[in-house]
Amino acid sequence: MTRVAIYARYSHDLQRDASIEDQFRVCREQAKREDWRIVGTYKDAAISGSSVILRPGIQTLLQDAQRGEFDILLAEALDRISRDQADIANLFKHLRFANVQIVTLAEGQISELHVGLKGTMNALFLKDLAAKTHRGLRGRVEHGKSGGGIAYGYSVVKKFDQRGEPDRGDREITEHEAEIVRRIFKEFAAGDAPRTIAKRLNVEGVAGPQGAPWIDTAIRGHLKRGTGLVNNELYIGRLVWNRQRYLKDPSTGRRVARLNPESEWIITDVPNLRIVDDELWRAVKERQGEIAVQYANVTAAIRDAHSSNKLNQLRRPKAPVLSFVVAAAAPTHFVVRTAMFVQPTSRTALATTAGRSHGTPSRPAHLPASRTS
Image (cartoon, helix red, strand yellow):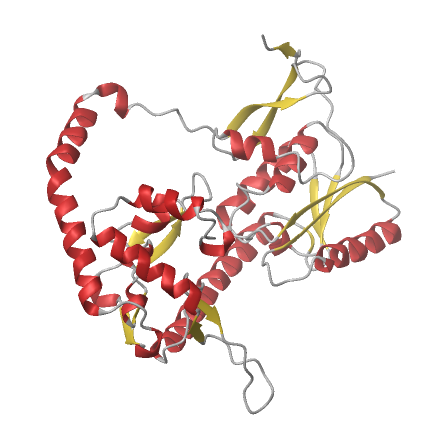
């Protein structure tokens, strides 16, 4: 009997967990009609379809395919597996080498033609979706509404329009947090270091952004990127949006920030959201200028030292196959496994077993276990 593995994914936090089960259900029905035996199910929840690199479910699926654990990969549609052209082509190539066919309910058996055409269509869909989302967010920001996220010192205003639909994007000042914002600005302007301020707030039991403990980077942030509490111009009633954009690193699948030209920034005055007066804001900027001058020579010296040291220019080679360690039953025993497409980072490696739902992987017979001292 043909052995089949099922893969399901949904890509956004706002989608339901039931979406995974819905995909599993229709795939199980198809497998029953075809008289296929389901030997495993794999899933990735709330993870983008534009990269398979950071998806533990798809990584474990690839490992099992290489060990010959199933003959067919079944999914609802090709875009459930990936929307990235390069990733879907690479995945198709690896599965074909493992003698595994890809079958979807929407497209049937996947061939090179599907990979080329559907990969192009999915890539265009992602580009078009990003452009429409950006355009919609810009319109909201120009009307003084939030372009995403909520800064410390504010809360979301929940209201409805005339049709009863949620009217999103409005914020209001949370006064007890606003007092903390003013206090931080005053202490920073007076010469206190961000680390000292954060430590003092934590000792006093003052909750930080999203209820987390205060850390110095949450206060000082990055001056050019406008991150960090003392750099947030919303506190002076000035909403700045599109200061930076995010690009996905094709090697790691992670987003990397890139500064946009100042001419592309969208700036809207929102005086009702002002928390800090202009005098205090200028005092903080003057303090930041003093710090920049004070440490300019130190920063330059460190950069020169790093650039002159050839060891700092060396990097671990990037490889399409990662060997990593998975803990076995005993705490001191480990087993070597391989994962495709991943950079050699332990966080990703140790996460790759999380997406498999049909049992704990066993050690390949040809790889001996090693004991740590």
